[in-house]
Length: 71
Image 1 (cartoon, helix red, strand yellow):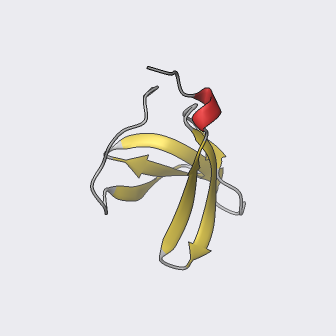
Image 2 (spheres, helix red, strand yellow; image 1 turned 90 degrees about the vertical axis):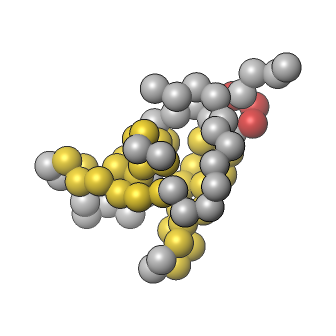
């Protein structure tokens, strides 16, 4: 799993279905999941606090800065 906050260009987010789970991918890495019928995303990496649907074509990813190490 990824443990650092990635610096990414716009647009690299996609979804992938695995059985009854739907995964949110960032550059091919699973960062959040939810059951197909559920409405709430569950973060899979420590640097994400929450993922929520903003509209039919966009989502909001809130970073958990308290869970990220300091330099």
